[in-house]
Image 1 (spheres, rainbow, N blue to C red):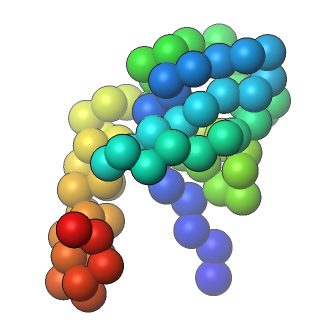
Image 2: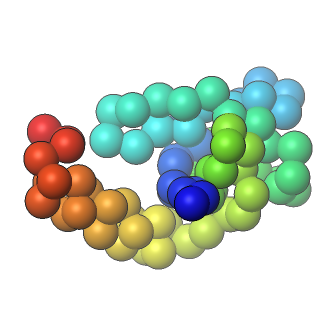
Image 3: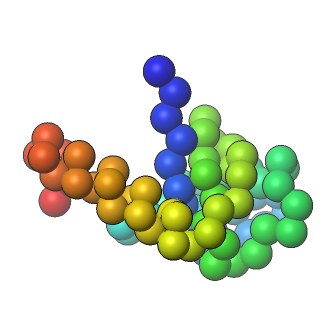
Length: 76
């Protein structure tokens, strides 16, 4: 099974970036996406940003992921 999650770009250094969600920070690569800027939301799979998405869509996805995780008792 594959899982891709939305993260907000908080730092960019060349093709390396930091994506963040709920205080979780992840080093990611942004090679596959043009014109990524700090503040953009991207879908991340296996450490690579694979698509930019609108903030509203990202936040809705994150809300659903959190609801499932809360139901399973995984995220505090």
